[in-house]
Image (cartoon, rainbow, N blue to C red):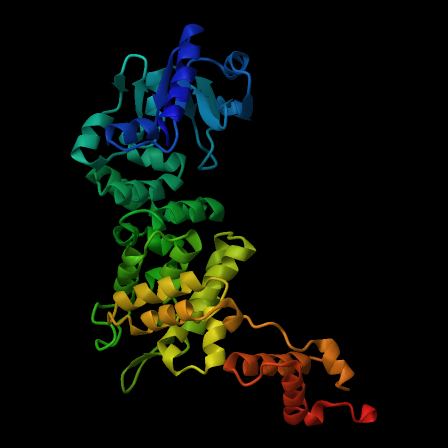
Length: 443
């Protein structure tokens, strides 16, 4: 975020102060500044009421007046300006039953963790700390403000937020907060699938995601949210293919090996072997027959439970369902390989395959082969122009029906193999290989 954005945030504070109000930077931006990081955004907390904030700025958006929240728009940038408040009672486990305007100290005490409860006065260059957040930043500690059990009871999503901040910063969760987290882990089931999905997405696309998975496991949150993934623990694998250990260990290593993943890729990596525990058999050796197919079914159910969009669900499911195909790419027919390489999410497929190999046997030969093929092949090689259509088949005397797709796919296979390059050659192939599909009444 550019320095100009910070200057805009400082202008908001100055305008509020000039109007006789207290105004401070609040929360995550202060934490990040003290850590030497550039904040993703700047939030302002003030004693000004929402209507007073709206009166001071030309462009505002009211997004939560009941919670004292107003968005101030300066140029192309938006800033959340929130009235200092205190809260009481959380009967639904998320929203406060009572909100009243308060001062900065009370506002700090309602927040989740000490490192997020800091204020900063940009006009005086002064940190204001009512909760010991500076000391915890220096000690690299995640600590709930006040009674951790009460903080988690107010909003169980804070259980996952504790894990996210610990993983993101490489901090430890202090013992009292950890004890409450473990005791209240089952309460995460009260949180909507959408909120859990979004928080998990931040965890799985952030730094130290393997450590985060271990922390989710150790606290019981993994079993409460994703029992299918928790079942990977202790699910042994053949040493010759997976010297790293059980399926959960493999998955953790895969997550750590990802390079800047999207949310669907991160979830697919988490779930790519979710079919192994229910398909594990042991006879001549340990096997996981059709674990990719079973895993795709489980992944679809999990995505629905977490309220993924249809497009994101199909993205995740496709990655899980196809991840074993890359083991045999060098034995594939040319047409089958080209179809694989033109998959809509081929880059994600290749990245999942790469980390799958790195986290097990370490052989990237098939990955490199696919990269070489992609570099060598042009768009027309993997997506050749269509030589025939359904209308052409009707003209040839074939009766419309589901077998049309089989005929057209065979023609495209021949194109991809380099056996057919012209319309006449395609027509000859159809007449030669599908003689019995024609309607005899038309000759």
